[in-house]
Amino acid sequence: MNSIIKIAIADDEELFRQGISFILGKEYNFEIIFQAENGQDLINQLLENDELPDVILMDLKMPLLNGVETTKKVKKDFPNIKIIAVTSYYSKPFISNMIAIGAVAYLAKNSTPKKVIKTINDVFEKGFSYDENVMQIIHENVINPSNKSKRSLFDKDYLTKREIEILKLICQQLTTSEIGEKLFISPRTVDGHRNNLLIKTDTKNTAGLVVFAFQQKIIKLEEMGF
Image 1: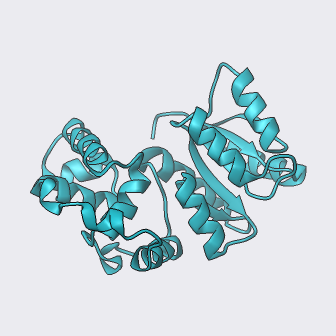
Image 2: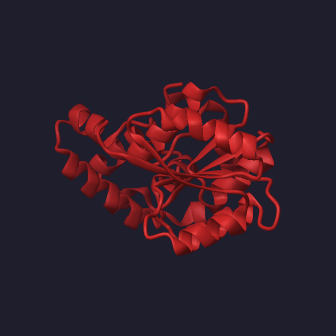
């Protein structure tokens, strides 16, 4: 991977910030551009810095402005920044809430450095990174949705056979290049189909496509390849 991934870390625990910054700083393709001690500090730095991060590691429990509210603000004002939720509370309500407001990955604070590094790389390259536990929670939420109307209104015939193929491969967390190789098409063509999928399904990002695929029963949990 040649691209440098610019990272910001938002956490009220200085020891954690410094520790994770030290670990990630050793990776040749990572650049820590700033650290924030709470959500408001993060927002201020995003507004003041000319250079924006590609990825934010976002603690959920912070003073002044917690991670949930901060994520909402970031997604509204800086929609291209990818947010990885980081917390000690690896529970269904937290995960569901963060996914709903735009987090594209979820890490427990006791995750191994190897998993953190892989998650950041996956998020940058694929648009999201959900492990088996998170996928299970998304699946359970779709089975018992609070709003069933949106699911029933969509006509799956609106998607072409190729778009469905690509959607399934996106859900299996293949990269653009891997999808292209598998289907014998160029990465540019894959990106074109991905953009069409976002428009047709009225979703904002790749993670939203995964939720959509579950809602429409285009893919089953057992097909995810875990």
